[in-house]
Length: 238
Image 1 (cartoon, helix red, strand yellow):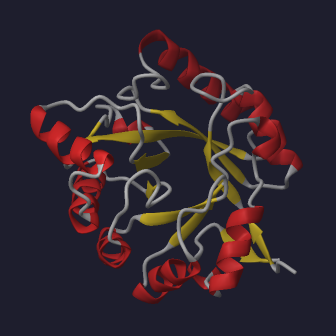
Image 2: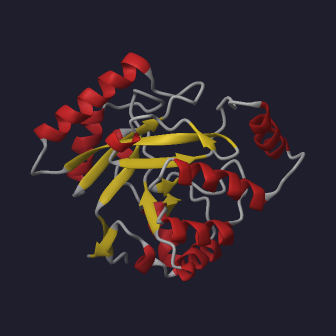
């Protein structure tokens, strides 16, 4: 039986990107789940299909601000963003990065590289022409450091990375590695290794519908299997 409570869900999506619910529905679901905090963390503008930009981004930010005021005292509603790695050491980090409460960064498909060097590094990795987990980790970490990210989402998804190296660097940078509950991308051995390195873990639902906000079952089972709850930063003893 799980003896820990997750206090916040910092990785949730809405119909502003590729989710199905509204920010309000996500907030209400988080309250129903007994969470203390929730972030609406849509994709940054660099994603070809899901990126939120322009007037749409303005509407989203205004809605999050209004929800934060409305539900103050019940739950903390946070402005988040899930940045896209757009090349080696590059991301779609916004100029107003300091206005975001939670900054997540991850590698995703469907992102157009900003330069030829990026196309070489990431395109070759995806096509299997060059599969270099250490080099991939270096590229993501450099991008994460530049944008002062709080979390690296779903490590190993779409692109294999050197987990021991990433954990060491994230410990030094103060960045948390996510155990993603939509699809766990880390093995129990890798989760234990991250814990033993001193790097912090964070559990995120990666919810794309309100009913999945605060659904941490898959990630919680993996953390329990790895005996790594003491490394999870958004969990308290139940």
